[in-house]
Amino acid sequence: MYIGTDTGLSLLTGLAEDWQYERNVLDGKFVRAITSVSGASTAYACVTKDGLYATWDGGLSWELALRGNVHSVAVDPTNPKVVYSGVEPVGLFRAEDAGRGWTEVQG
Image (cartoon, rainbow, N blue to C red; front, top):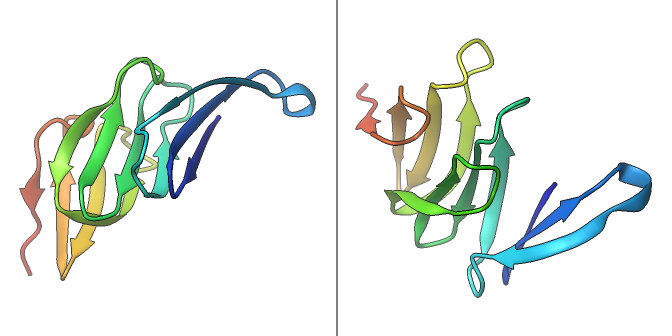
């Protein structure tokens, strides 16, 4: 489980009745939103005034996938490789490769 706070991202493991703290990542960053892909090792974290971070290895490492003031992220429920991200002031980006390459959605 990933828990975003105004000071980073905490990773927890175990069952709901007995969560175990694993470690913190993205220290000192304000994590605005998080989403993950069900059944996969992919997750995304929106960091205020920084960008969208992604993990493709179950949280072992995190990479800046999209620069900007990212406020939201959503994974297409029919295709987990398609990801959308909303940025401020007004913008929508789409990736078709699980968040590795982004194109601004026009119109």
